Image (tube, rainbow, N blue to C red; front, side, top):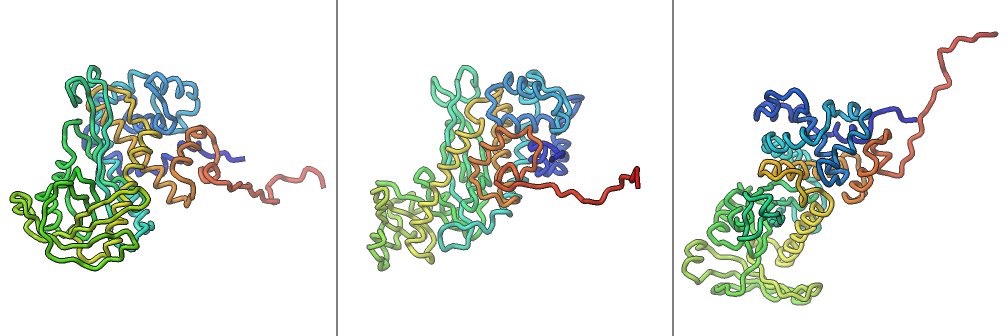
Length: 388
């Protein structure tokens, strides 16, 4: 019989708490706080993410029903709606943002050798955003349109392991292309983007930083062909060209040649035109790189469907950002555990299993796999013989 800690406690042991507490101290998260400190706040919010709690009342009712187990789960304070509401409103969201960055670094190192699906050794990122609709009367700071509120979740996703390495939360009115100004390009790295990010001044900044971009051309794109390479049209490639921009402002913003690849995707029956500054990789590899961009759409769908980022526990900007960053931390924690314990299950299945077993006292590996652990008892014991 297993007599160790609960599954929730085993999950929390995978978090680098020795790096969490200095962040809390830096932002004075526990200043004048006697009960329900930042570590308790994080654990309770992570519990809500893992078990799909709908509201503060829901969280309070579930945890109070298991009051005798809270201490062993690492929750040392009384959980109430008032404590949770105040913590969401007043604890600086940057505490949980910086802690998520630490988890991002750990996950990136674990997934660095993950198969990308194309013959390429470089790091490949997909950049995109998703819009989260909000009620304007409850979230007046998130004005999007005249009668509608929204925020945007801009994400740079490492395609090796689907790890979000850069997340920026903005109001719904910020155009996607402006996020390129917040990125620090890494030399030799590929950035795969859709047409919303087609801005030649910003793309030239990536080029001068010795990074590579892959994006789609717009319908009114004008250029002058300089050179054409031979292609195998049986693969779906139509042309592979070196071009120069001819429109005045784009040509001034990007004065160097660009590679233009036209590809017909038989699976979607679409004719796609790609622009890139990578002249060395095969044209088919560039086309397949853009196909991998679909992983970021799956990531957005996954976190919206399986984590709590569409219904919020607070209405202030701080509460919303706190919940989003803890949701991202939860996603990263599941990804880290999956790699550390060498579990072959998809993240969705792991989350489903954890949602109904957090209070169980069994080994985490046993809960997530089909392995049955059998305790081994020694025949030797120290009990004295009463009779000869």
